[in-house]
Image (cartoon, rainbow, N blue to C red; front, side):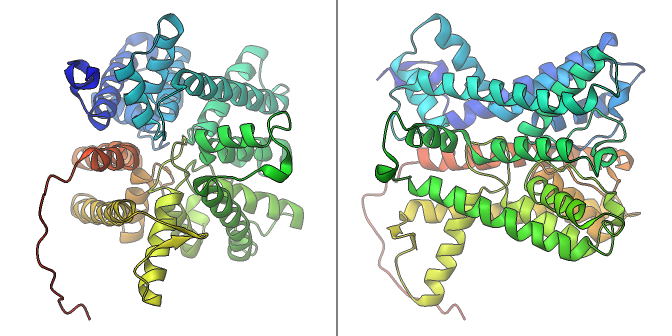
Length: 447
């Protein structure tokens, strides 16, 4: 009853997420527009673009990061953190420190975090925040080991923290010039960033389940039974890492990686595999990659990371359900199964809707950009659109040269891409079927 009567919580969780991100975007754009945040004058559209890219953890920029002061770059760090963890998650965590979360608040938090039960919401929020801070600080320490001899202490510490947050939140924004390409043979730097990207992309609920069930103080190894979601995420993540490492090595060993030793080629191929599903960090110029490599990046970015993670895309679980549905149709089975479990029909419909609407939006924006940005070819435009929607952030280099309308289209695409996998699923889940009757069934010709 409290959930229905409260004016604030009369918003659905999806609308609350949309409103909160919109509010954060407005505040972030305002802070970046302040003189203290900029080295020189920057047009408003570029400030809005930078704030959106940071908040949506995309990594596409129309102006260099060097155009912002330390204060401005600090604002970008906060925006990346908000985009990675979620403003509602951070807000509920702060509120829970000073007061008990009411029933309505716990229910909304449970829906936003996609929990089976809203009990223990405070502990889950605490786990997410503490885990994130610990991983980011650990990552910053590992990156600092590489940067400490290259920059003054204060700058090395700041750069290390910036890169760590950017990697863990799958933002892909480089504060180091000229970026990760400078460390193409540096095992410490590339493995540190890869570790942060992978952990951030697994998802907080998966990490929490692993921490609980793999803790020897709670259960013996023989009794460990992971949930279907965790098994899907771990299986697909491992498979994609191995498969993409091999694929990128095969495609680029005689191209962009030809001058490296074999171990360095494998290192960079693994780095590509970790980065291609959300972060967008590269150690080689995008223009030098083969078209097959770029297509592979787009496919991986479209699939994305795990649900409840800092990454985006349609999510690994959505892709798994989509593939299982196709497999069931081919085999003529009415039930969609994964690892001995039947998937509920409403989730099948949602997965199909998410995939279809995502492809539709990418197609529409690509079509519009082909009209507004006529000096670029189809592959360049498609990569820009997929990179924005999946918040991958890899580009051929057309982002700074986009027209005003092109920038607005990419801003909208980044925003929709970031909230789509969250807001769309929650919105569909909240819609209740009010039909008390069913229509007669009838078959139509499909093929």
